[in-house]
Image: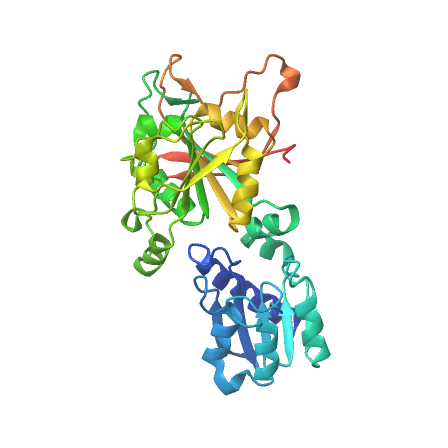
Length: 374
């Protein structure tokens, strides 16, 4: 096949991979296209955890036509036994003659072993096609595998004059329906959503994914709402009311508190999962929290919080992206700022790189990357 055809098929595999971004976690969402004699005979993408990987789904669709076919996959086929069998072995047994993969799997359990197993069985293996595009599909998984914590993104909503809530704490709603639907999709892509007790007390937020509000096609919306992210509340002194929406049964919850904080009887009786963390003058140990979330296989971590917690994450160098929704309104000088960052000198300013800026309904969404992130 020509290089142009290979590129076209890999682009299709990447398109398929994105279909799993709301449901595949904690697995990386992967796409696969099987081609025989120039015709597509099978396609697949990663199913919810415990279900078929992309290659298996494509092989099921192709049946006997997989023999002699070329498999285009966005990530190296796995070579180990998890909840499912090794995809490399399945491709070999199906008689696939060539595998074109975008990138090597950063998972130490794979890391080239899938390619080696294929080559040992006589399968031609090519890798590196559309590699940058493939990495952009699964940044959280790659981050977790290579540095020991997932991708951390802070979501903020502000007025044109950089305010996030009135002095009274009133913040509903700064942005419009389209921006709020966009946030629902961000949650649906996340393994964990983190907030602070101040936000819980002010808004009684649920932080769950609500299918009807995602703006996704019905089938995708249902998948996204079934796999709810872990809701994490940072609450040093355990002030969260047991009846708070963020602790209800619609999604799993984790209440983080200071090691020396007594657990209220009502919280203990409610059976809420608790995580004691060390604390200092700045608050709870955020790095330890991210280590815990890494152990829970959290690839994508979304922080939805007030200015103090957002500033704490940024000051600790734990932020990969800021996603800021800017509404065309003014809230005045008494309203609360975007971030609590007590900087005194111009030399202390935090440099950002604008990665994306686009209109969402009547609002604007700005994606910025700290230039000196951890």
